[in-house]
Length: 243
Length: 332
Image: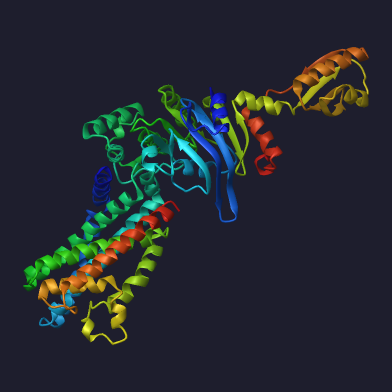
């Protein structure tokens, strides 16, 4: 219980120090908003096909980038070492830092979602599945960002590592085109990307349609990625946090 | 008190003792480099323990292991009766650490830094506020409470970092080079604070390059060279050990032969004479003086002058480094 409370303290401090700063909020919202607008202007009839992908992409980039920036910044400034000297477990630190990054990712994604709903009339067939998709995606992507960033020392190294993973999975996870339309050889690869399942959950929440026969397949798969990321993050943090 | 503690460690006792820190056969390697090789020592409750050594000796590695920042390869570390590896959270609740670099949150105010860390130590809101106010006052930083940490001078940053280590009233405080880079008044003020902390009953584990500081503050010191403990004891004990191998300057009232002097005085290792003064390298100062006086009587000459320079801990440290082959520390 004490460790959970400590995770909340860590999250609150990170939100106060980093995530509530206007430049970061703007950075997280502007790029997906402009991209979405460009897609809408080009073809207002089909923007809904891409909307779940853009929201998932906002989550992916927001969470991984911010987690990476915060952890590498704290490693360089020595404040991560200060945190390691307090009576909190490595898991608590991971939970606290991932939770604050997740809050940021969810908040920016909700701004994009709200904009789509209010300005373009996007509606929800299943808000519960949409919410589950956002939560699972935020958890997985925050943890992946933490794992990558704790293994390096510089922000650019973290970004290089993240981009090496993020850009390829954007094109195989049904962000810009449905999985059905992907080449046959790409489809099996799409199944090993956590982004695929997040996109499909958001798609089901918005349109009631999904590549998978049931949204629960995506829930289970994304939940599995979350569990694996959580299991990996503890030892990765313990080994690398003070390097 | 500490001799008893050392004896208990030697006997493998880990139960109730006066040792607040017990380290046995601690080993740590970084790849092929062996940073610590079977390091053992004990720190008594309530003392200021100096952990000295040249750069790369393994001091910070030891502190990092004792504070659970890095894992040991082998050995045992017991702090406040608890194994740091098995129960790190419980140990961290009872220790405070001031790392070599002041590493509080640059963007947070001084007061928020203290309150945030106090939250993580489980202090209640009311206690957090009171502690933060008290510490800001004790460390003469009350007027800087709202200022961000990054805006403080180096000395102020150091003081706030020490304050942060004392938030939870720890039993042991680790101070890694606490006065490094500070100007003279700031360093003196910090040394006085360290003495005040220790007088309050807190054990202090101090690593420093400033040997005058160690001599002034520490009850006992340990000297580490290349990951090995080369000597341990009070500053006076260490000086005495080194003095056994010192040079004596002796002026005799008459001529004596070098050979007969060396033959009559086994405590003299080598002898040379310039302008009537003998420069004698001795293995044991007290024995050599007695032998020289006796020899002079036999030869019918008088000892006009005999003397040795007072050895500081720094002199002793340099001699120990020389003996350990650490010549780079000896140069000008």
